[in-house]
Image (cartoon, rainbow, N blue to C red):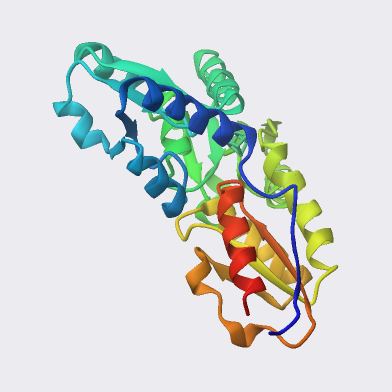
Amino acid sequence: MKGLQVHIDTHSGFCFGVVYAVEMAEEILDEQGHLYCLGDIVHNDEEVARLARRGLKIIDHGDLYGLRDEKVLIRAHGEPPATYELALKNNLTLIDASCPVVLKLQNRIKSSFDKKETIYIYGKHGHAEVIGLLGQTGNKAVVFQDISELDLDSLPRNLTLYSQTTKSTDKFYEINETLRKNGITVNTNDTICRQVSNRDKDLREFVRKYDKIVFVAGSKSSNGKVLFKACQESNPNTYFVSNPEQVDPSWFGQDESVGICGATSTPMWLMEQVKERILTL
Ligand code: SF4
């Protein structure tokens, strides 16, 4: 035995948007034993598998076209108006678990669009939340995930800037500065979710306290990638796992301290399983 001291970061784990969606799904699953969910309820394969065992069926937009008279959960990322229209047409009951923070952002973008503002969204191309945001503008807003995608000389002289909720605050303000320095008048809307941006700072503090860090997240989680990078910057001895089986005993020396933390999509039960596995080494 290596005599490791293992601690889980109590601030890690689901953000309130994901807790809300999972609780809503569990409630319906208790009542009717099955429920459709449009897209992964959370970017974590283990949590998706747990809910699948209880009757949750993940479907995509293609499946939605063929579905009739069922209940379908909208996950925390939200959906564009076209999804609500299709549900009405197919007599589907939507259980709307869109995160309140995302819904507020959708409304703000819609009202900017109604005022005929030129909208730019700093976000990941093709991400579900971004598709929902774009839908508020009839897909007319410009999405970019890096400032290098924009030709600064030909940009409109006045624009309204929004951000996907999970982007980095520092990068957002850097972009804002670059635009202003290039003579563009920017109506800046910092719409980054503090459940994510604050976590960055808290995590950096947490990981400095331990010899080794095991960061737990699904390989599809954007937020997981961002937070893992932040942990690695503050403690280079940080390892990424998606499940307990991926823990490699060679990472740890005798009597070391180990911190376990994760993304906003990582369930606490999974971090506990990782802890149990490390304690057996
Ligand atoms: S990260 Fe923030 S905006 Fe996104 S689901 Fe969680 S609480 Fe909502």
